[in-house]
Length: 147
Image 1 (tube, rainbow, N blue to C red):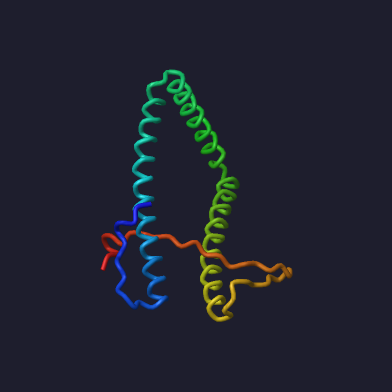
Image 2: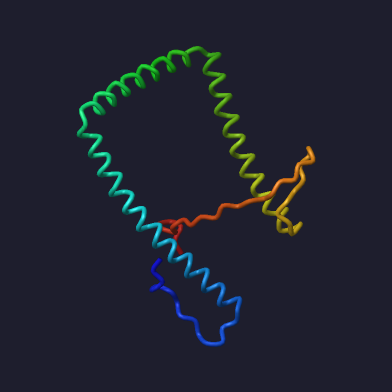
């Protein structure tokens, strides 16, 4: 990886600050690398999609697939015309939404627990020890979210 964008550190910088700068530089380098790989991926995917679009066998199969998907959608809509089936479908959607909300709340509770208990493990009601994990990611602050 290219390290030309690294911030130089002044002499006598303590270890914690040095580590912070090193991690910050690694983050910046990785962001740049991810962006360049994304651009290359986009180019490669475009070329591959062009190959697919120019293949008669693939075009025919795609059209057949669209027709089958349309018939499937129509059949599903016919099934959902029944009030009992529509109610069941809505119940499934509501339960999925409830699970999503419960998971978000659980995530917040786990963060609080980890801060208070100073541990990344918790024992569940069934006696199983589970580890608390987080997946950090970066999101651009643009538009209404920018400072």
